Image (tube, rainbow, N blue to C red; front, side):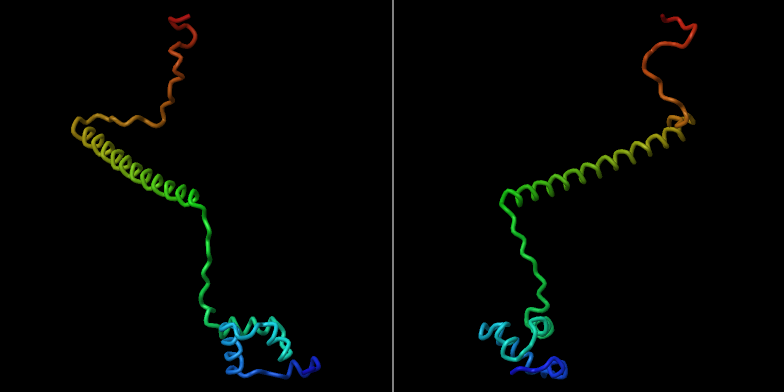
Length: 135
């Protein structure tokens, strides 16, 4: 079946024909290259038929192979992450509790307990500037 390029472009295959050939490929009765050779069709066209009419067209599964040590390490990391998230939540609750206690104490005693954020921290040396008592 030798066709010219123009004859190949004008030729069309029915949907039923395409489905039948794809079923044959999936059943292992024929191969893609046999269909290409027999009907003078490009492999690209056959793969398009498979994509459109094949039974596995919707299955986009991916197989991931891991060693047992990778799986164990991943499980341990997930457990560690969950533990750290739990601890972080507890610390956040403590912080909120302490903030509320400071607010209540400030209201009750009328004294500002919170540190003023504009003050500079000390240098921690314990020495005084010029004219100080320490030398």
